[in-house]
Length: 221
Image 1 (tube, helix red, strand yellow):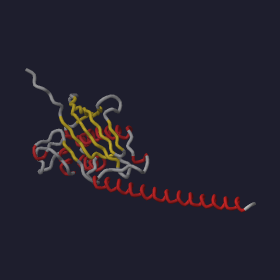
Image 2: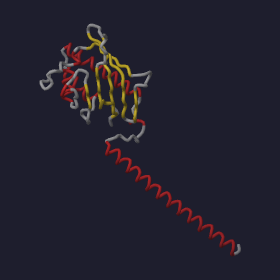
Image 3: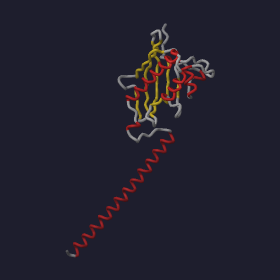
Image 4: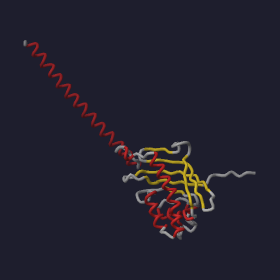
């Protein structure tokens, strides 16, 4: 092997080493940028109180879960009144429902019931929500207990076809549609309903926003 070939191999080896070092440097800088970006994104999320879904599918709400949560709410409403009629502990059950179906024990809930007005239109704490459903709280004298009518059947239907009335954003889902409740006399009442559900660390969906109202009926001449 002559001197020129040896020199050429040395140059090539040097270039390869330099390229590897340059590649490592680029990777290092890229990782720094990614880390800084992630920190910036997470800070924004924390500042805004948002939910950043990155753990995987277990934190993402499915349509099936949303529909099941809505039906569970309807079933619970009926059962509260049924327990009252049968002499059961409807108060304890109603309190349990507010813990399992609503987010009161874990954070904020915005709740605007159907039959509420004035200073007590919005029930942002568990006490106010419980009063609305079962009454008997002197601090809420106008509440007679919506769940104690009693209703013998309740069903829901979201707006649009199939799942068009459901929006899912990671671990948060929004629904809009109607709930129908049927009394002992067989008469069915329809209310407009908007729910926002949040999936907790335990995998359960809980309501963080609940807005309910009677449909607008225009006056006829």
